Amino acid sequence: MLARDIIYEAIISYNKRHKLKIDLNDSTNLMTDSKLDSLALLQLILSVESLTRKRTKKNINLADEKAFSLTHSPFKSVKTLIDFLEMKLDVN
Image (tube, rainbow, N blue to C red; front, side, top):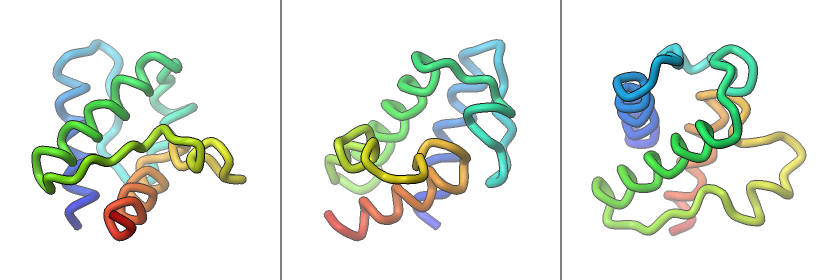
């Protein structure tokens, strides 16, 4: 639940700062539904990392070598990002 809360908070914050809105739904495809470009996705990822540090005191790097070597991108949807953050939190 912590990972979902962090991701949703990051999305809400992103939506407040940008005209392009990301639907607050686990099934939202971050690549197609929200039409995020690479810079916008990076901003969202950095926001998630920052919120994770604030909430857990853990330094999590989401955009690492493991993320880019996976067969299925952890950044494809809100749900896959939640799952990836949960995995990272369990490891650290």
